[in-house]
Image: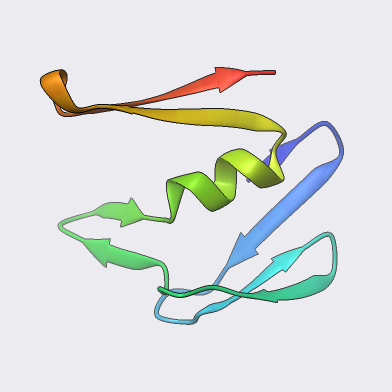
Length: 66
């Protein structure tokens, strides 16, 4: 993933994430299931200077630009 000069790289099944060449440890690894990638949304939002909100009534996650 990339935004505003910041790059985030994952390896499937690995909890280590590279953010602009710095290694960051996550609680959960990137998962692939049925052709879809599952990543920690809040971590991605924070790293890309956005915010995330869970709308429970709609079972939906929304990411907002800051």
